[in-house]
Image 1 (cartoon, rainbow, N blue to C red):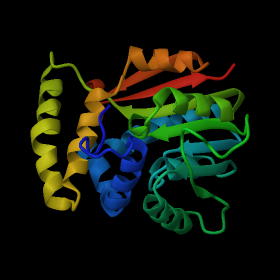
Image 2: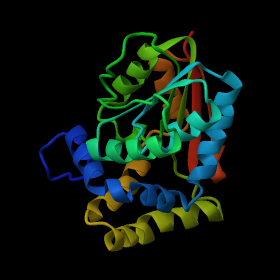
Image 3: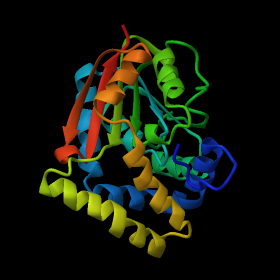
Length: 242
């Protein structure tokens, strides 16, 4: 298991929370760097999928600073939106962004553990997660929690980084960028340089593609599907609760 600080005996969950607290003010920049500034377009693609379902309530897990939740909130002005995240400093920034974009709208951003979500069974019509599941300490448990809080007939939408094939030029270029350029940029712009090494490493370890669809099925979801973006740099996974 890749942790932010492998030599530290603390669990991954505690290390991830501390790491995101330390880079909270730079996290949006980090996502733009990881995606080469294409992450906004990917979120828009997720939102387009959610619009087809048009759920009345949406939970955004590992909401961070709220970018995906905010995009969904703009597209679904009548939906009840909730965000949950482990990092209090990330949430502080997320609440500031939500307050600025949705004045007067009830839009709770709650501190909580994705592997023990503080919600009753069958509470939401849709669950989203953008660039968060690879940081779970226990990925099957986190997926099981998403399944538990979904209503029957609901859908999960997960946007996550993946690794493009080395057999094409884009894949080779992106892997070189990930391994050799991004950590250097991170050392320049962040006080926590290890974060910019851990995050690319966590992408390489993540069970993307067919392996992740299998995990969704094992969690109880039906009809897991995936849409590869930008030649494999990221993937959107969807699955239903029967």
